[in-house]
Length: 577
Image 1 (tube, helix red, strand yellow):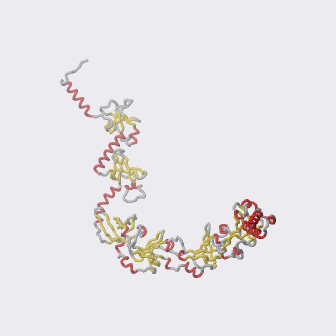
Image 2 (cartoon, one colour):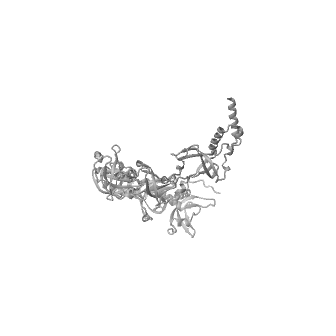
Image 3 (spheres, rainbow, N blue to C red):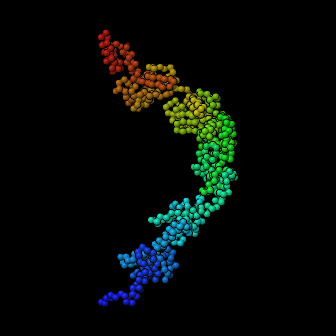
């Protein structure tokens, strides 16, 4: 082997020069994007030549097809690829054209974002929360939020699909490689210059005619002026009266005159007022009196009532509870329409809160007071059943348009009021007795059983401790159900009142149908309450026997098991004396 030690000879210097020039042409480094020359194209693969590599990198033809490059490539053409591996386990070079495209595209997006330049793209598809935008230059995919599609709500964006247009880059995530764009910002930037010219037209104090209600917010109402600019009327500038939300006064699409009260040329905003077009009605609120009838104009209908104007700027609330005397939960939308002039009575004026309350029903006579004068308590009147629920009837009484309440317990004197209720239906005529009238609360209570003879009157000539004969109707664990002879009502004898001795106080001793005697233990004719007791009768008879018979022998013949013992005690007391 010959070793060359002399590197200064012309041949060695020429070789060194050639070697350095070759290495400097292509820097081979993994993770970099480099250009490769197409050397061969087959049905499945594309072969590249890259200087400095010991073998030819191979690209799958499907990768180029997905990028839309299949019909564009040709022999000798140079394309950028990402060098992933110089040598894998099999000794092959790994490259990717699609990854190189993403990297180069991302670099262009970063450059445009830093320079705040718009990019060209097209909306390719919809997704959750927005759309997907493809960067026309690089094919990179970006996210377009729904709120950034336009400066106004769009129900249909089909006319924007696949149309090349400008987008503003509003957010880049370099770690995840995500980009977010906005079409709205591009539109707004064009409009900003035009909007500044429009704002210049107005000055404080100008009157804007026929501005259209465009939308609401919690702090005010937006109006569109001549289709060129939107202005805000703050909640406090809507009316001299208290307003909780703009929808209480305005409807979408309505037109109103506005007064310009503020202009912000930096933010390009115009503030307007509705109430300042008319004098403050609260300055002469003393002209209005409580409990006096006035005319009011319906300006807004709501579920809970209606807003009315006593005069321009003086808006009042007519609550649904003040619409009618006898109709509960009535809707103002069924009674009135916007523009109607109705009579009302002012019920409250609060200067501090700038609030006026009115009532429509007070303009009419209270039908409950009329009823009370015409049909006082204890009057029998005819009515018609207009409604029914699980425990009561509602009866409309004769020629006065009021409904009275009839509880099922006031249908019958028996204890089965709910069963009696099933016999009645809407439309049935019924005679009732007026039991109670509360005009202030709009309540009338009536009863049907009070028009019938009271079976409890059977006890009018009875008194406590009196013996009566009853028939046993049925038995249960609680006691006996009995009916006094000559009476139509059933009563209960409690288990504890069946006998003196607890061993004999068994309801099972009776089978039903027997006739027995019992005593009246308690009687209250006003409350219609009575208590019957067999035990009390035994005690009464026992006492009478002790007083009548003074010896033990005679007591043995009586049907009381403890009578002989009682007689012995009585004899001992006599001996002690």
